[in-house]
Length: 258
Image (cartoon, rainbow, N blue to C red):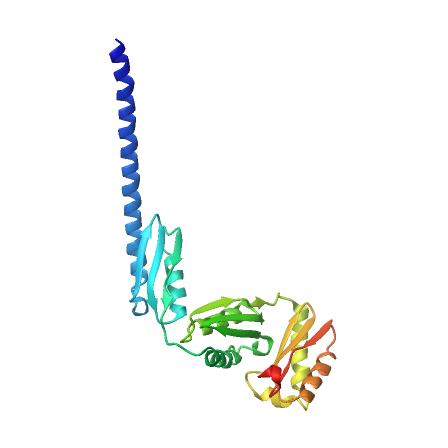
């Protein structure tokens, strides 16, 4: 009787272990099948020439992307496409950008020129003041954009430019404000219609940029001489409703503007 009483509990434990092992195997098989399905879907989403050297691995519904692309924007595209696949719980983007090597100074100058003319024709060019710095191919964008579309446009322009390895987004978007919109328009009219400054109105890039946040005006950009900078400051202060004007205009040829 004692032997039987010992065998019966051991048999129950063995049965429970077998059930548990079966459940673990079934779960593992299910997870493996789900990972395989995700890998298939992600691979289909990345079936394009620009992703030809990108590799996909999936474990526990977490997708790891490795390999290389030519442009930083392609790396971001791969990330977005992967996140949008059903069942994906996370993405580890280890893709490296192996496009052309470009000197930092040259890259910054090219990007600054492109950004200066970005959004020309949309009526917001004069109201975007976006700064740019480049170190080892990593581009940092800062400053203030008039709206989300202006910010997105600047980020996209930089992301798809050859030589950019990474992009750090520090751009702020000016908060919506009817009062600020009125001040922006009045500032642009006042500054660019001034006879001494009217020459700048001919440039589509609008060299004098006007940022307005909560009634505070910041002037940035480049002018030809100190006299133009001073006149812009005086004219900016004449607009009704302005709380303060910060004059950050650079003078061409000055040491702080090179």
